[in-house]
Amino acid sequence: MSQSATHLAGQPAGNSYDDVPYPSNPIDKSHPDRLHCIAAIFGMRPAPVDRCRVLEIGCAGGGNLLPMAEALPDSQFVGIDLSSRQIEQAKTTARTLDLSNVELQEMNILDVDERLGKFDYVICHGVFSWVRRQLQDKLFSICAENLRPQGVAMISYNTYPGWRMRGIVRDMMSYHAQQFSDLKQRIEQAKAMLSFIVEAASKDEPYGQFLRSEAKMLEGKPDGYLFHEHLEETNEPLYFHDFVSRAAQFRVQYLADTSISSMLTKHLPPEVRGTLKILGTDQIKTEQYLDFLRNRMFRHTLLCHADVTLNRKLTIQPVLDLFVASNLAPQDKDLDLRSVGPAVFKNAGGMVTSHEPLGKAAFWHLHRIWPRAERFPELVKEAQRLARSGEPDPEQTATDTDQLAAAMLDCFLGEHLELHSLPSPFVSEISERPVASRSARLQAAQSPIVTNRRHELVALDDVNRQLVRYLDGTHGRGDLVSHLTRLARDGQVRVEINNRPVADGEKLREALANTVDVCLPRLAQCALLVN
Image 1 (cartoon, rainbow, N blue to C red):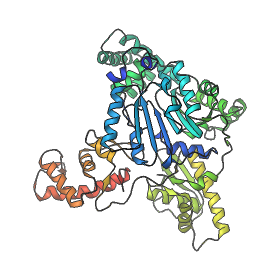
Image 2: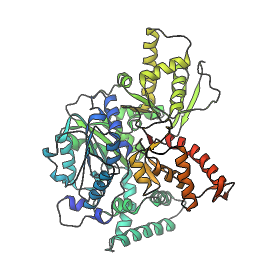
Image 3: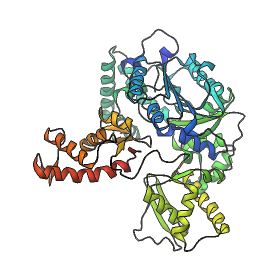
Image 4: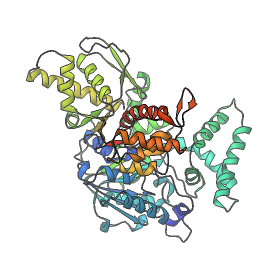
């Protein structure tokens, strides 16, 4: 949640977001590149991501918006939030990063009108459920009035039925904490209350197990998350079908979920799919029943204008113009790319089995170049080279293109791989004078958690953190080793060999030289290095 419910409604109450800032981090599901690809898959003609206009409603401290602006210098970004403290923080960061394509305004949602202009992409994460009906309707109105004809909006919100259970935790913490006026004390008392209930509840009953899982989820969250998620006055979840119905009143329609696999039934048992086919007579009903099955708590919903014609019968055509990335790893180290037979590829999201040489070669190549994405036509050529001998004729290439595009689309729908509209905004090769993104360098000076060029958070240890801060494109390998050596001698970096600290001498420099040689490829693998 990003903006204060009471203040947004125009009441004179103080803004709790100034007192307890909300964590401002990258949200990969909100990136225009992701919105573009999903819209294209469903038949839209979304604006090119490298030349677009983006509005973020509830931008907080700019943790989501500013890394986008840095990576897409020819696009324009506007961020609004009612918290003056967080807007000033975002402006300071933008100035430090020398971003000229960002406009940040302290603004009430109700004040958004045609003067703000039209946008290709609108992002509204963590606002909708935490404001009252008048403000929710205004968000739908912005989607209708400030989106360009082929524009895409993303709105996230808490959903039923899952939030009925999570609401129990909110209710008990709010009930106890409301008797304390000091915000910090309210947060500490809310934590204490939850801890008490968890300890007192039976460990063998479903209720106690649920409470423990919620407490564990909140353990790693900052105080700002707990306060605004559970202790704010307003938190109004709703069913997915209600959200879509209300959006339709403003001539805005449901496009997709940012997690496309959650829209589909293909991974369910046959008897479940059969029943859902009878119950779910359209896409909205199908997804609502799926939410019932999964006890879903939260959604990232994409919207577009009601007069846009969507293609729900997906085709391979959009894939042909996109880039593909995948970290699916072959499970057979001695994989024969030219043989016919099953080959298993796995990642954290699941498993894919490919039987044909072309598919096996494509997945192997994507794994080899990960995290970099490959343009689809180039992927076809490389897969042909690896899977076949000789030059394929045009007819064979056309067949291979269709076959591979269908496989890539199917894996994208299952979230086993990524589609992108642009080349990867990072480098995998280590240059003589490596460069980390300006955002990452600035963040590394303040925290061990930085944003990479895949719009993800990356945790750095002390050595990598100090290394990232120094990667400004003016230092070679020897400079990096000397810099880390000075830091180690000053006690700012700890170096160990065989679990024994090394403080000085030639062994220290040698150890740090080896460290640099190991760390730079890892930083590249984490998508932190740029041209």
